[in-house]
Amino acid sequence: MDNSTWVANYTGQLDFILVGFFSQSKHPALLCVVIFVIFLMALSGNSILILLIHSNAHLQTPMYFFISQLSLMDVMYISVTVPKMLMDQVMGVNEISASECGIQMFLYLTLVGSEFFLLAAMAYDRYVAICHPLRYSILMNHRVCHFLVSGCWFLGSVDGFMLTPVTMTFPFCRSREIHHFFCEVPAVMKLSCSDTSLYETLMYLCCVLMLLIPVTVIASSYLFILLTIHRMNSAEGRKKAFTTCSSHMTVVILFFGAAVYTYMLPSSYHTPERDMLVSVFYTILTPVLNPLIYSLRNKDVTGALKKMLNMGSV
Image (cartoon, rainbow, N blue to C red; front, top):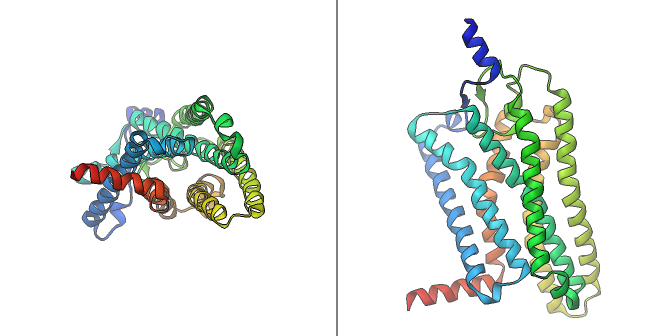
């Protein structure tokens, strides 16, 4: 290897190669079609949910405002990774430049971090609605809702700004092959030829903090919610409270469970194949499941959808 090639490799100016999971599939064309269909379902499902919430007066409440923000994050989330992956498979190219890799990493980290805190804000909203119903309109007014959502986006971007520059400035003098279908931090860090143990420890602590705050808010909110539901005399009130809360808890378990595996379990638990499988679950499948979870079990949303379809058929 000549000197110029070594310098290019060491300074990280060459393109990375995204190995992905199509190369490991016996039927890559079929898998590509399936992922494309899932991508379209995620886009259409979340877009319809956003449209319903913003066009229907009955859905102009804090809970649905947060759900619309969750759908927006999911649309952006899946759009950061899947189109690039599908285009690479169709075009037969699997390279990504260092700058594109950095942008993808930053957007991904920002959206993941924002969704962590948004799920906590949604849990707090349910706590206020169920435990303090008479003060709900005051405690969760228009200004408070926008402040909480803005805070979620800000804290998510802090995560992106902290981890992306440090990760991308490490020297990469090993193989350029990222054993993943997008530039996820742990997969990229494996290519570095320098000692990353200190950074990995700091990243672990950062992720613990990013998870600990939302989990504490969510756990505390649902503890008080369960105590309040237990004291309810109305069976109908209990059923409604359980329905709205169980939908949110399903999303929380799916999203946080995958995040804990990716960023908090020791490296001995990780393999490239397992990491990609978990990433597929929460980057591709979760954005499809969220609108289904919040709409199929929600009479307000299904009623608004029927009303919109009836208006379209007139």
